[in-house]
Structures are given as C-alpha cells and as structure tokens.
Length: 493
Image 1: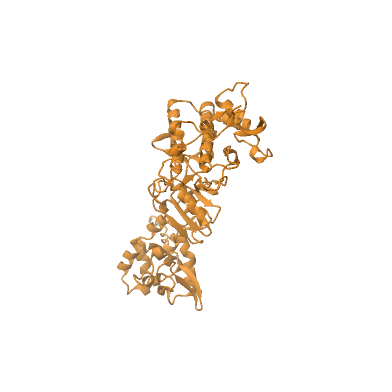
Image 2 (image 1 turned 45 degrees about the vertical axis):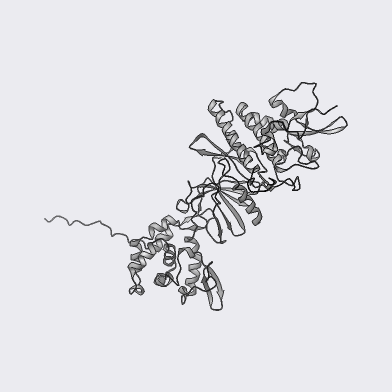
C-alpha cells in the first residue's frame, strides 16, 4: 500500500509593503499631536534598492536615466522631495520636479501655496524667483498640488544643528505656523511657568538634532515682542561663564518666540526638598563653595558686561530674579554632585545709573530695602541683595536641612511694609517708628540666624554704606554685595 502523500503546509510569502506604506507606517506622533516622519527613518527607507524598485514601477520613466535619478535622490539633498512624490502619487514627475535648474530640492521645503485665477500654484519661500510659480509642477492636477502642499509638513520637520560654543550666538530659525517640530511625547513632559514664559520638558527626536542628548527644556515667551525676545537672548549671551545656562537654539513659530535649553536634573529648591538632611562632609562643603563662587561669577560678568567696549563704564546687565528656583542643577562628569547654573533671565535686562529707578521686575520678597524709596536703587543692588538672601537659604540647608529653611520662611512671614502692611510676605526687613522717624530694620528672624543680639540693643538701621574692603567697592565691579555688605549701624544720637 502506498504511503500517504505529504501535503506541504508552507504558506505563500506575504508581499513586501510598498514604499508609500512603509513611509506612513514609520510616522510618529509629535508632542503637538500631529504626525511626522523622522529624518532617520526617512534615510533608511529611501535607499538605492527601494528607489530603483519604485522608479521601475512607472512606464513613464522608461526613457529616463534611472541610475542617475537614483544617485541624485539618495545623495541626501532630494530624499524628502522624493518621499513626498511617493506619498502623493507623483513619482512619474520625478525627473521634472528634481530638475537641476527648474526643479526643487529638500532645502526648498516647505513651499508656499498661493491662489491664482487658474487655481493653486506652488512657490519657493525665499530666493530671487520666490514670486514665480514653480514650472516643475506645470500641468499637474490641482489635487496633486494640494496633496503635495499638505503632506510636505510630514516630511519637513526641522533638524537642529549642534549647539554653538560658548560666546557664539545660538542659531535662530523662522518656522511657518504649520511646521511640525520634532518633539516626542515620552510621559515625562512637565510644564512650569517662569517670569517671562512657560517652560516645557520635551524629548527631541534623535535624528533631528546634534545636541549632547535628547532631553531639552523649551521656553515659550509670553510676549510676542521682538524686542523682548532679543533682550532675553542677548542676556543669555552676555558671557561665556559655565554657570550661566546655555542656549541651544531659538526660533519664531507662528506668533510666538521659543528658546531651547538643555534639560536640568532639577532646580535647586527641588534638590533641597529631595535631600532634606544633607550629610555635612568636606566634599560637600568644597562643592558648595565652588558652586556659590561660580554663581557669583555670573553676576560679576553681568555687572561688568561690555566694560571694555563702553565709554565711562555706565552700562551693565542684570538678572533681576536670583533665587533657588532659578538655579538649575545639571549632571556634570567633572562634578559628582552636579553643577549649578543660573537660569531664567526673563526679569533681567540692561540698564545704567541714569535710567529711572524702581522699574525692574523681581520677586516681591527679594526687593532690597531701598527699592521703593525715593531715589531708588539700580538693578545691581537688586541682584546683590537677592543673592545674599539666596546665600542665607543655601547655608541654612547645608547646616540644618530643608526643614530649617521652611521654619526661616515662616518666621519672616509678616505684613509687607512696602505694601502698606496690607499683604503678608517673607521680606527680610521691616519699617518701624523710632526716635520720631521711620527706620528700615532687619527682621529679628534674619538676625537670629547667625548671631544673638543683646536685649538692650536698639533696632538695626540699614544704610547704603559699604565696607571699606576693596572687594566690596562698587567701582571695582564686585561680584556681589550680599547681606553682610549692607552693614548695620546705630544712628548718631
């Protein structure tokens, strides 16, 4: 008896997806909710093999030099345009669209769409012939032109270059409102408001940047004013100090201005909360001293901004809002505990002694004593006083932990003398009647942090008298004038 015939169970191989399907399948969702094709996936898919297969499908291209077209497409400057032609069904027009003289390349994307009597036409956004319709699309159906215009945003997400060296301006871009930015959702996005805008944590698509890592902080300015944007960018470029936050790129997207920064581990206030009882060791003390000196160096560079260029030394930069929330902690290979940098210059600017006083934005409880008095103070006084307040908190955290900072804030909480005692605040001084007048006095909670005062001593009057030490002489552009430089003295009887 013959053996039963063996039946093959081999299944027919599934057909390979065409290039258009692969391109659509590799699109990802951006943080704005719109989908885009990452440049890395595009370069992998638009290879010589896939391009030859795609070109060979169209009998209209049989007379063309397919090898030459393949080399031009895969050379890197035309792969986006070719992907667009594949997605909208215009591959037969590839020779005209990629013509070296009358055609376009990836650098021309995105194109403009304008209406004319004959329908929609596509034009370049810049260049000497930007007002002329592109002849490479002549004779094409309106449906294809509209599809090309709408689909181009999917493949035209920008690629950011490597950040510049310190002291060099960050690259600036002007993106059309429909541009899809290459930021991905990763579940760790965080939003927080700053003095001049909103900051969002974003993850940049790896193939769309030359940064040191994929994680960034994106700041959108509240003001759409070009002057406000240029002021903040100029402040970030004041010096080359490693303790001033670096700027990766800037751009205008629709009506808004954006600044892209490296993402920090956290701000210093959050670090204090995560480490409520720091271990006091020589390593930590050396780290703290080095970081404080570095932050003071940033303020010194701002104070001395342009000294070698200006005449008379009558202009300077200022930060305007020095506090723990605006000091960021970055991981650093040279610093095991991290590197502190000063950020959020939205309250800062450029000024001179001849400018009107008291016109500077800052956190209310960090105002110096002479901020709201007649004659006022220049913003350098504001930075120095605020930095002294910051040092108080830093030293308290080092020696007594985060809980002691909270207690210190509670003890300072009282009616604000500069607001008519109508609102409570954590300001560091008070107004008191004394000897028939009014005196600005340091609060007891501040004095008790570093010393005990005898019960018989009267209120300590704050004066604008600097110590005679040369390092605190304003003419030498001292890095800071902290609380200790606002010396206390009893008035003459």
